[in-house]
Image (cartoon, rainbow, N blue to C red; front, side, top):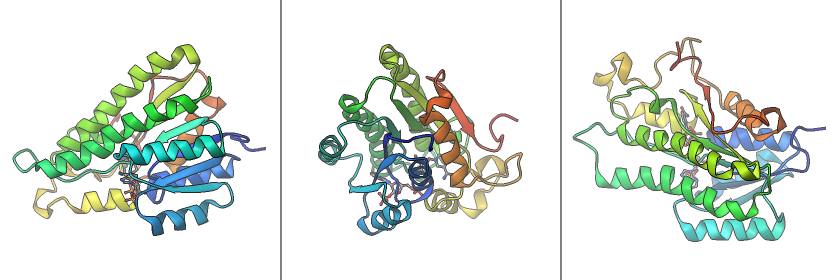
Length: 250
Ligand SMILES: NC(=O)c1ccc[n+]([C@@H]2O[C@H](COP(=O)([O-])OP(=O)(O)OC[C@H]3O[C@@H](n4cnc5c(N)ncnc54)[C@H](OP(=O)(O)O)[C@@H]3O)[C@@H](O)[C@H]2O)c1
């Protein structure tokens, strides 16, 4: 018996990092899992890791046509979605004074527009009692010089979890924000490497050692996603769960 037997889940941005770990864990717990990502080869490799319960759908969450195609395919194949994890996200190093329009568009279109339309377009497929999980970031809870735009999108995501939880409560659909601190992933490592070496004050380091003395592992975020996805968290909605080694709280 798995915790997610007979459930159908979508994890966006699941070809690497946190999304892949969540997809793997959900499938291990019995769910059928749709994985998305833009790069075909990485997505195929991820689906192979997830196994028989993984279904890859190539696409970009910031492109509404791609989302329409994704949800049409899920409707045809599965008919419903019990769990949505809006995980696809990225960030650029860009201190005030150096923010470019291109970086602004890239970050907001994936993190904010992508999250909003992923959940909105999933809505017709969500049964009463479904679980929606939005990936925020500890960068939204403390000042990380150089991550202003990224942090603003992640603060907005935390806010969306509150509003949507209220809007969907009458259908018992729960919406929660899952907020990692520094986690070792290709995207997280790349973003941290983009910080200039001469700007490594403690406050400027998104990977500053956590009180637990290390960065997190994607599987540790996946364990919390499993909690939010399933019945164990049946009385939790509009909340934010931190997986940050205590970094923002201690
Ligand atoms: N790692 C950390 O330290 C950390 C900390 C706090 C929050 N987070 C958040 O956790 C989430 C996952 O991050 P991660 O560290 O696991 O990143 P990652 O290793 O870069 O993985 C991101 C995944 O999203 C996909 N993706 C990116 N843009 C996409 C788009 N427009 N449409 C569809 N898929 C897209 C990527 O594949 P393609 O490039 O092929 O599309 C990849 O599979 C993000 O929302 C991130 O902001 C991460």
